[in-house]
Image (cartoon, rainbow over all chains, first blue to last red; front, side, top):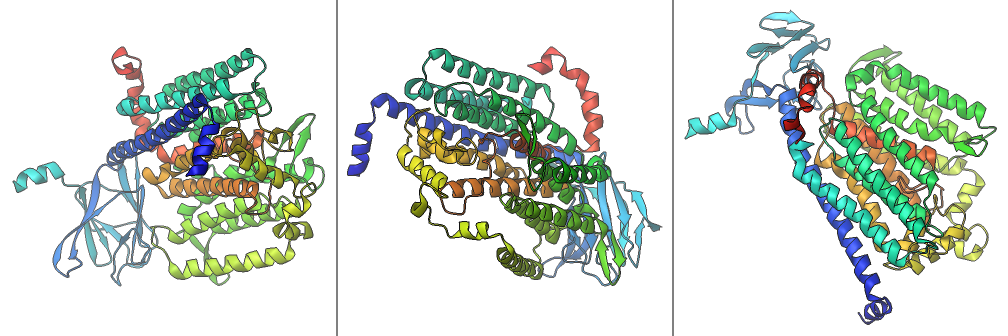
Length: 163
Length: 432
């Protein structure tokens, strides 16, 4: 502490004040940048909902507690891999599903699905496909598993309904 | 820009205030013979700020934080570099800073559309091939520099963004596997492996061992992203094997390293203060001399030491501006890199690209700062954005452009939307 006082006493007041002010301003700049980046992330999230057309996949399945309910899989990247493999974005743990079964991609707000050479095939509304674009309400079948491609429920509407 | 207007206005105001406060310090504590020298420097900094902001406003993109930060750091760097050995505007550094800003915009425009870059991937391989040929045939022997008169270029610097692009653009092709002998492999991974071996071999052959860790960091990051593809779930066995393989490779490299490299790892710089340890000794003395607040801009002694503006620039800033300000400058660069954590990229391509860029910057910063402080052997690698050097600065600008592409990617949906909205931007109502 004594050494610090000796050091500070050697500095002239304008020097100290200027340096302290410059350091504080640089700190504030750093803080403002972090805040700005955080706000940008919220904007980007909203934009992604627009790009991804706010769609999701739904299927009837068992949750972590073992109860049967409707499971929701949001499509939150521009490429979604579906398959049995542990590293798939949407994992379908069923023997009839290949490890890397199908790939969903979005271009121009339109989602499309491509079969990745799976054994049991990919079906959309009962037709076997290699690649096709998807529309809301389409039923996709991977092996024995069925999923519905649909719009995400509006949380505000849901809230009002609950009230 | 207008959706987040207040936040951007505040950030820009603080950026300008940062530059003005630095110029104020130079005015009070700086070593200048004539006040006009300082006035020219202040004019150049403020003009670059305002022109940069004006140009930024003209480009329609989703995020602007990285642009503001880059402009802020480059101008800080211009003030630092212009004060070494007395205040005078460093024209060379000003030109390289402008080149870095242009390269940033170029990098952003070229890499934001992942579908386009995937189609143009073959051209990136061609560029790498041309750069390798340039190193082999134009540098004159085992060197990394092409010298034309008083102008020098380091082509290996330009390989960095190309290598990151290849790593990123090939990741989504991982599921397209073909059978080669007994294995199912992705052709893109094979090509990437071949390019990696070529680059590493070239660096080894040219004895540019300082850049090897930077390429190594990019490669490790890309490999990690591949192991976690397509979802960020860590494959423990693969990562353990990767660590063991890495350690084995390091041991082999250590055994095969040239004698001068092995010597550097355990050299006592204080025993040979005026020989091999001269730069590092002076750098450490400079840091100690500067203390917390520095001796004043242009008042230091390190400007007499070779490579004070590039290899030991951290120590030169510590001496003149103080450890506190030098550390905060490094922190600013780190904050710039962490923006990808605050606003994560939405595609595998952009995520891999951003990870590669961050790995390159962090490795380079660590090599420069820890090398200056004698914590690791001296490598002669530049400090991103701060060190003087055209090739390095342009590459850094391009890499920030790639980082920005991850923050503000272009999806084809938006191309239609932006085209439709452009005429409306000209109206007065939208401009305000």
